[in-house]
Length: 326
Image (cartoon, rainbow, N blue to C red; front, side, top):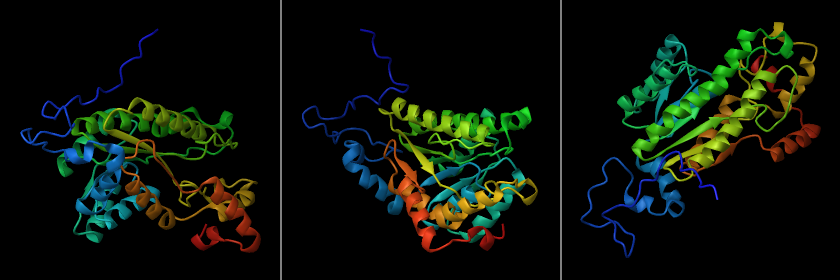
């Protein structure tokens, strides 16, 4: 029989100061500085509720969100701050980062808001983002891989090569870079959870003119599933995050780029789409509720919800895009 390869990260091993009879830590054992109390880690499944309460009430969580100077990322940053947690915001533009840090700091004076410009496609910049978070906050409890790019919406043979390369580098390589940096860092600190943001194509759906973007999101789900298996015996947890269809400048094309199918797309948006202000509170509550549960999925637009939306549309029409000025 071929021996099974070892896990990516070895387990912490047996505590030399633990009672062999009861499995409980010995009173003579050293203080476990910088980590959760042993009483919370002896039985992870049993104590996951305690872990969630710890994140909600007894201490502020430290959260890094990539792509968080606008849209869904900024919305999630605001919701974490509203709930008493500290946030690191990031995007490629330093000017935008500084502006958002100033705005959020003014809106939430009792919380810590840190900003760091970072192109997730550049590994060294992701390392610098982690380092800035640890220096400023001491640790990272939650890392949200939200940075994304939709790219040109046209048949693939018409897309300039540099455009789809940028989409792949941001959505797939960038997401991998962030996991590659965050996993060892969280393993070293003994705790932490990573959330990878899904999008159209994650479930295998195909739409013309979205082939590069959909490919990256399909790959993201596979990659996340693989990480969940690889990290099963480690303190690092990974989960899926899916916002559904959210109306932002990234999802709705400008008027000059709306083709002949725009009216059909507009009907779908009006039925299924939601605003940042509607979705992000639910996503953040879900991440806090599921914190510490390996393989958790926080998904806004489930198949059942899609069916309900289409059924409701028969009796009551939504006109979301016009209300938002699109």
